[in-house]
Image: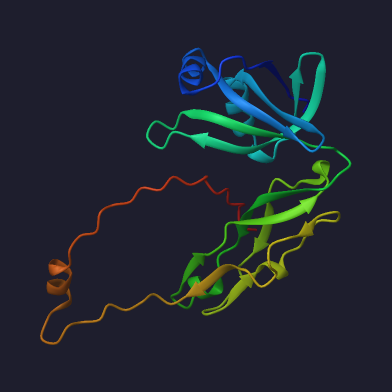
Length: 220
C-alpha cells in the first residue's frame, strides 16, 4: 500500500497557532532525518489517524510530500491529550529503505497453557511488545508465540521466539514475555472470617488505563 501524506510548511508556531490548526482538522508535525534539518509541517489529522488504524500502526511506512519532494517516513512519537484523546502533535522520522530501523512489535499469543487448563494457574502477560531491528520492508506487524505447553511456574522468554529472517532481536533475550503462576491465597486474620476482612479493606481508587487491544489468534 502506497500511502502519501500531503504537507505544508508550518508558518505560525506556538500553542495558539497549533490550537487553530487542530480546530481546522489539521495537526502540527515535525519531520526529522539524518541528513536534513527538522522541518515543522502541517498535515491533515485524518491522514495520521488512518495510518494509526492500520494493522501496522505506528510501524507503517508512508511518504510525506513536502513541496516537490517526497520522503519515506514513519511515526516516531505522538502527543495525545490524556482527557479528550485528541491528537495534538506528531513527530515523523525520515527513513531510508536500505538502512535498518529499530521498532517495537506487539507479541501475539496462541493457545491456552496447560497450567491454566488443568493446574489452576493464571497467565501473566509480562511483556507485550519487543524491540527488533530490520530493514523497513521487513518490519513484522506482530510476532506470535505458542504458550499452550506452559505449566505452573513456567515462563516464555524472548529468546524462545521464532524470529523471521532479516529481523534481529534487540530486546534482552532473557526478558520474560509470559508467566504462568498460581493465584495468591487470601490470608485470614486471627478470629476473623474472610468476608469480614474483605469488608473492612479500604477500596482503592479505580485506575483506568487505555491499552492497544491485543489481537489473539484462534487456537488450532
